[in-house]
Length: 388
Image (cartoon, rainbow, N blue to C red; front, side):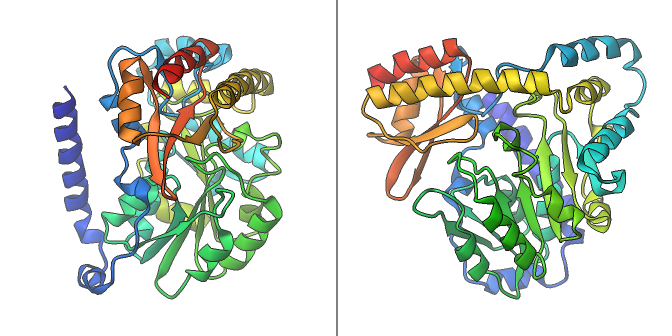
């Protein structure tokens, strides 16, 4: 089954690249071939979360490898899905309601918003467009979906190491900007480290940098912060900056399997990127109905966040008890250095029914654990004490 899925992925990837060849600017292939190869983030050679899950054992006691929210979606969302089934023969035109709801909350108009089936298609759209224009600057390590896809379009990837406290190094990234830079990509909070940037520094950075090159902010985990609105770059868009902000319902809202995401940017940029995406018609009617009732459901969000924090504290206590340090996380996952080969660690945990992720950077082997239900965290603790 896995071989079949890998073949399907290869066929889809080949078809996408072949169909997009005509979009490449004249001479880009030759130009890219003459450029020295930039150091690509280790994440670009890492398995994606989807690939990691496919490689994990079928029977799992704890699925802690994809940063999903095991407490969602909300009861309101589930009811909306059920209620929508009788009219599922109709096309999902309710997307307009969701766009308006987002626009009203953010103080924008729908022209600033693009919907799609999760944030992945939005990242792909940006990768296809900017990957044809020049180099992509990103963190190392950081979420590699957009850079990995842009590289398929011959984009040089400039991967900038993190700071000593495992945050995106804005100063170093700004110094890398030159005439060939097409996009600066920031995942904030950052995946896989779970760290967040100082807001004053980030705002100053985007105000300067967006005058030179577009800035893409991936805010997939923003809802886990104490003040999501105050920690977002939505205001930069409203101020007219050349900034794009991507959001997803896949995390705190619990929609990883329902697939709803949106991008906020200047209307002209929305029009440009919309050429590379399917848009709201890619989202099922049940998912849209669920998103409409879930959006900014503070009672549900606070409950899910409370459970996440309790499970995260349990994980912290386990790591401390076993003599491990960790990177303090503002998200629904935690990264910590391990004392054996990362691939072996993943395999040994998998044998005990626990799926996790591994990385290698800064000369260390690392593990990233997604926050699960308390029973899943207990399963992790049991397996971890045996393996560590």
